[in-house]
Image (cartoon, rainbow, N blue to C red; front, top):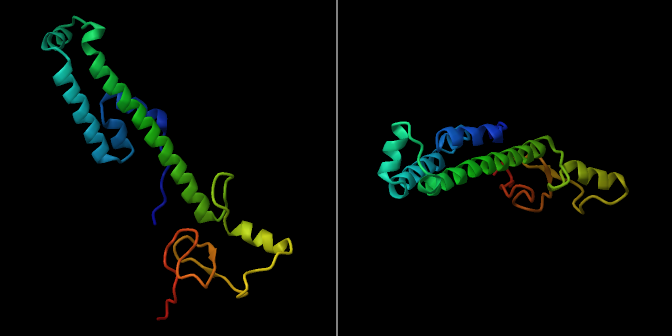
Length: 159
């Protein structure tokens, strides 16, 4: 599994403001970026009068009321790019914490938490042994056919 890289939410928002869809392209959300680009283009085509467009190209700024619907769609695109980047970073942090076996307060406890409980005097599982998940690397109960942390199958590999 490839490690996700962190993205800068402010850069995604700035790129989405400059060219609609570019912030999403920076986040490698190609379909979403294309969708926002087409949505903004459609909003300009449908809601902005042709006189406002030709006036803007000639150097005469259009009235705010003429471009407000298209501007609202652009703002929504910028906010969406920012939110997608923040969610991407949270997922990236969660994945890196899981791969390192450490947990932050809002994540599921890792194998370190289980070994800390055993060290405090609580008994290990009744089978007396655990196995490591080949996908996430956490210790899991060998009586299950799947990892209780990532839900990947962990059956016998010698079958």
